[in-house]
Length: 342
Ligand SMILES: CSC[C@@H](O)[C@@H](O)C(=O)COP(=O)(O)O
Image (cartoon, rainbow, N blue to C red; front, side, top):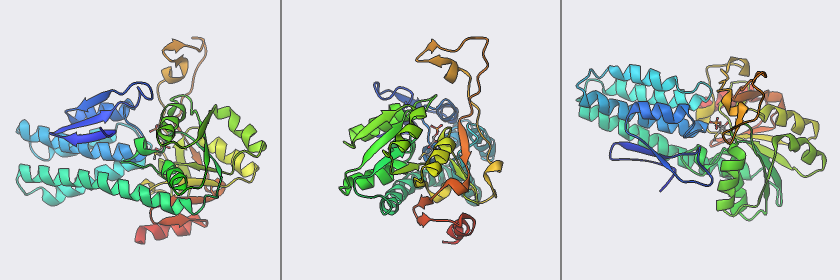
């Protein structure tokens, strides 16, 4: 099975908390289950959060029909799903698309509305897969033969409908025979790099080496990194980009060492409503993600912990943004605005 599938009115998702050593599935039969899957990071990654939320709306509407409720109850359900995680704009983008379909269809029968919502969710899923392939192809033009690429977190197939954004570029470079090597930041505290990215790369036979996050600067100094490619959770109009905590530090290191720093993301990750990164809400997650490691307490109780899940990389640290519509270079403000019209 794939890492998620909507079938017979159920959304079945691969439980990413258990990877790489266990393959367990979490079954979402209700929109509340979908909320839990997103909030508890059973699934994660900006594009996948959007896709899964769209199916959450479908399940929500199914419940409306079964319980003889007013169709407009869907607004409440959409708002509830929107409160699952705050940073990845793809969540709000996908919910907005679903809301639009509902509004255009609201005078039809409930079963017709249900079918249209399901069609839209499937469309969001299918589009994402082809978008990632295009991101891969555009990004590959930036990758040199034999490149050593550093990535952070997981912006792979597991974080999207398939293929991945940052890992889409990496896959494309690998499958076009460029002999690349990937350094994978383990990505504390949730370890998306060590658990998920290393797993995906290894499954595809892409040579990779996992490092602790604090080793990246040393590798750059040794001349072992040719470029950095990461995904994004939200990109502001001026190019400021929110991504997994630690991305900002990497961008500073890359700039210091004169290493190109690329963001790979679909246009749906651009928030055309915000001017700069200071407007991006940064999720704070449970202290326990830091206090505990593998179920074992590692921090003294007396110590406080702080667990922001994302940070914002300023546009001036970004060499280019790779999208399905092409590679965007500075001036970002001007070039990102043009994407809206394309
Ligand atoms: C293609 S996924 C891009 C981003 O969503 C990814 O880099 C990231 O930061 C994921 O964070 P997560 O907290 O695991 O959802």
